[in-house]
Image (cartoon, rainbow, N blue to C red; front, side, top):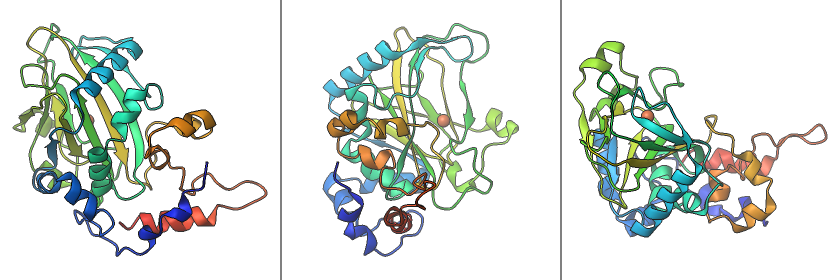
Length: 293
Ligand SMILES: [Fe+2]
């Protein structure tokens, strides 16, 4: 495949951006995709809903893919009766969802140019019948980072609820504005903080940054909630999942959607040194430029 690093001259000529700024390189796509409202919500509340991010038929395909790839899980604590980890590269619908234009643009806004894939996991939530409230405990997704969390967000999670999600159906819940504290909740706060439901329609995607406190409610109605949690990370953080094997699969890469090279870190300098040759300096220079915007 042709080397992409040299094709990205705009990255080298763009002024660095501060937290929540939009780079000159990204601005035209935010305009075109009408995402300024989403950006404002992320700044103010730490989470947002991107309306009509995916066609409904793609959500049907995604749902079928998650169900076909899921393994049974212990549903006692949260009602999650099936889960499917490490999903990128394992079904065309998952890769299409991962590289949707609105998703890529918001991931780049929040985690920078050259944002990478972090974690892709599907889950199937059933009505909760266990003990306790069945809720997923409040947490911040970038909880392996030191406190205070960096001002530049490092982790972005997109939640594709294949059928949409409601509070009674076991939706995500958040503490709006908690991202400004730049730390995880204390044990007391996980019990006492007031949450609101994040509800979506089929084809919408909920998104939250790595600092905002969130969890999910138990499902209280019949049926299932099928969700893909897709996590994106700033280029300097260690990706949660290791998808590098996909880069070595020429047939896969030749057919993968545009955007996959970026998500897999193909243009970054990590792990490029060999005993015979030091790191790839062209890739280093690309990473140095892309990390600023
Ligand atoms: Fe989370």
